[in-house]
Amino acid sequence: MENNILGWIYYNHAVITTTAPHEEPNLKPLLDGSIWNLKSSRGNKPLLARYTTDFDCGNDTGFWFIIKDAPFKMEDLSKKYKKNVERALERCEVRRIDAVAEFDDIYDVYDAAVDNYQNVDNKTSKEGMREGVKKDGLEYWGAYDKKTGKMAGWMSCSNNGDWTETISAKYHPDLLSSRPSDAIHYTILNHYLNELGQKYICSGSRSLNHKTNVQDYKIHNWKFRQAFCKLHIVYRKDISILIKLIYPFRNLLKKLDNITAVHQVNSVLKMEEIARGDTSI
Image (cartoon, rainbow, N blue to C red; front, top):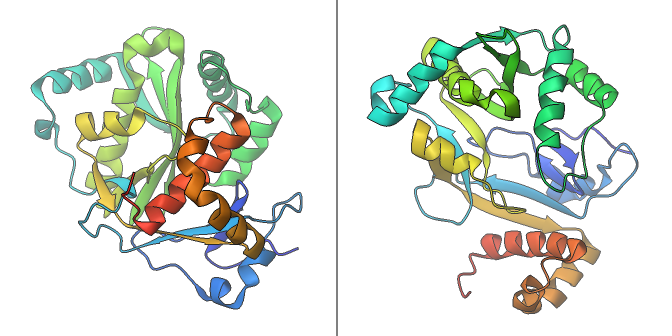
């Protein structure tokens, strides 16, 4: 079992690159076929490999990363949102935290936030999350409600030297009035972009599995932008044959998207559409 191929990791039935969005991926494992030896800890084989090129090409390719690459300035915010941020900073104290030492607070926020979601079927156990936090090497930021002293929210970030990626964030549903998200975003933008002078903060790529308002929130309120790039999908040989067979029926399959298995197939077909540049539908 191969679990260590430079620049690639197994993730959710696929192999994806670990290189920065602005860096060229290591394509040698794809060319020599060794990429298909990369398996999950349970021995699952990948169905496909996904990578991007031509970062921030300026053309609407249908796929993008959400980034903030300009120095953060409060005056760039709308007048209304600037007031919201000032109110958040009055109500919350944000600081870098030791995720292991303050894990109980982190999990309490996670637990309350996830329980507030609808139809959650993949909640992480406390011990499972604790082990993940010990190993992930991320930088955690906590927002504390000044009235109660309780953690109102947190965000984890991967500091990669000249750029940073926001990984995950959770906010306690009972303390949203203190606006912990606004306080945390203000703090991390100021820290990574202004204090450290990094190239950009990345808040992930286009979501293909479900609709999300998070990216709109960052674009409209914090002046993140879409950095378009070219999406590439390479399938395992048997999966490639299957995709060729079902791709012409993708419109029909969309009508059955409420079926979980079909929804998963539709997510792959959506990636295929984008990779092909198919704008026929």
